[in-house]
Image 1 (tube, one colour):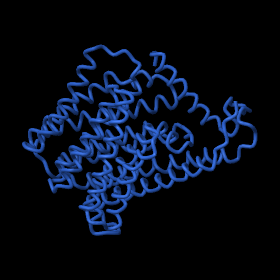
Image 2 (tube, one colour; image 1 turned 30 degrees about the vertical axis):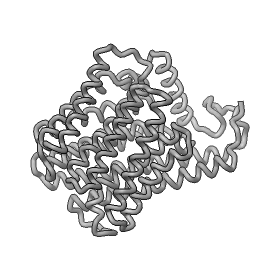
Image 3 (cartoon, rainbow, N blue to C red; image 1 turned 180 degrees about the vertical axis):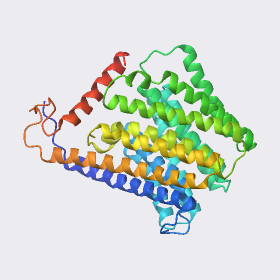
Image 4 (tube, rainbow, N blue to C red; image 1 turned 90 degrees about the vertical axis):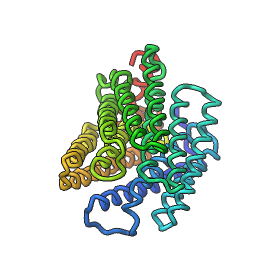
Length: 409
């Protein structure tokens, strides 16, 4: 069976997605640069407020746009893309010197758009995993409203953390939805989400209590992932499934760490303990999940397969070791360790971006130079133009999807 030749419309759509990807990458790199400035590194500063925008650029500008694009593609309606376009415009506007209130307004409107997308998705498929992600979108909207309303950024940041945690949990539940879990496992899942949401709500009236309750929710949900996530089974399979599973399980450990810190810390608005709490979630948990999901999400958004090699583990190992250094520096008040840990965090993320870009470019070149019909196979058994590593990654993904559908993964 020969794959259809992309039309000019699909090529334009692919170009638009590539431009969006470039904008998102720019926001991520700017957020990393701002984070290094916050840690005290002497670096060129393109704007006086970049350090203060570190968190909003990372969560609302970059990740909010990526999640919005992913859900817009899932819904398949052109107007669903208005949300991620607004959040991208808000993030880029903040970088360009737009007043923070106006950038926050654009991002808040974009998060409302994401919530409306989830409302449509729930009408189409009222499943537990969709509702979980919708709750995450609602948490993001509330956090943005708090930010827009001038509440302390520490309060908004915890709501943003809830947004990402619930979104990732919903995606993990979706991937393993055909597995038969015991009733009590789903009850623990609901209890963890309820505890987290109760804690987030409490932060607006009793911040210390809210932080501790949110920490308890992080612990319950981290333990749930470590116990029931499908990664516990796919880690036995070589190649891409094992890599993704290692990312998921190691990231879940950092969610536990964040919960323990929150339980002990209570009302922290700034300082080393606050730094350890937030980055255990945003770097340890969220970025490990990004590393594990990228081989699935990027091909879906850009229609370009990604190669998998063993050195794909290098950014993941560097991320975890550098975060250990950073958190150790935070908790022992060794600011030199904290600064170097933060620098190495950024380098690990940049290394991941470079390796992902190299993989995508290699796959793109292979597709551009394909001369034989697609049904002709090369010696590896893959479609013509795809090398053995890509073939293995693609085959791993197909086998994994089949096992999940059969309930044997």
